[in-house]
Length: 544
Image (cartoon, rainbow, N blue to C red; front, side, top):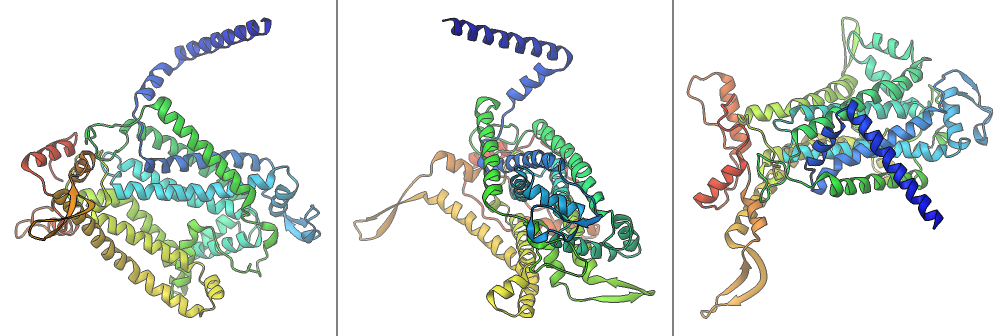
């Protein structure tokens, strides 16, 4: 009885303390207004929207594990004899960075688990961010008013690549040193300023004595600060602009429908957070990654066997391996096209295309409306085909990054395999584009057949005249609605003779984008209803 009264008193005091603290905070900050706005916000309820959350929770693991590792890592590049607990390397000259990485792995309690969790979290973060961007691209969620958020996402992806490379290079082992040697060659291939940049970053001729310390500062301070700021801006824009949603009854281009913050979304989000933490802890405990003690310390005259970068920068390695050895002399200086084009120009063009694509599609479409309905990828065959072609291009370069390992495992000629990849990187994307576009149009034709004939039941009947007929039933109303409600713009009209070239180019691109489509059977009333649901918040906006 006494214990029960004490528990009740403790609960009452805790409630009173929480209430007093909340009131005090609310008087000094707009807490109640923010909580009300957050609780009123509708959160997406489709599984594809969780990809961004996986990236967010992986970033949280990165920050927590990275903070722990920072307490023990020493970015010193001065060499000394290793006297740690790993016997095979004892007495060998190693840098302070490599020695502290070994100490983290073998002497710090839980250090190897945290190191491997950190590495796996980096791999999952970039992967989740990349797949999330693909979801945004294929569904058209980058369109107005979300162009800025798309650009923030592209910048986060680019910073993720930089952050991963910096972290991968910090241990100063033979594998990471080989990567730094490649990075130094890439920097020096830049005309005019390449050698100056190399001396600035490395502090002198390669391998230098300051690069690891400088990359450490960038890895733990500069890049994470930028990423946290961009993630915060991204989330604020998501809250302000609302999320996109798939076409269903009650969901239009003018509203945002989803689940409430509490308890539905909060429960699911917390569960996903714990699942991400648990999977990364499991991978860190049972799946070995980056065993630096196997590679040994970096030596400028040595290269580890089968040296491969992390997968997210593998496309650069593949491009370097496929590029022919093109060089020429200009004014007494060597231009290394075999390094400059695949490692500097190619990624620059790729990210420039990613940044500008929303504005390019808006210019081609002539559409200034806001869009909150997701596109089904099959309804935008050209955009979908372009995305698949880009994925194929990336996949071929990633596969080419391991051409030596593939040749050794399958006992094929390295030269033959390299030429196969060279042909594939040129012919693969156009072929993927054509196939994907035809598949999208075939899926549209299948949707039209379903709207006309209904869904097959599997039953077969025979008429009195002896004809066989397949049984069918009408589509469910929700599925019927999803197939009909789509926002596919018509091609722009052809400009008059003598119009400026940019108008003619715009009309030609618009025709190429949107002339191939399969019209869905619908009555006049249904078409009017579809137009009302896809009409944006800015009706009657003029074309650019």
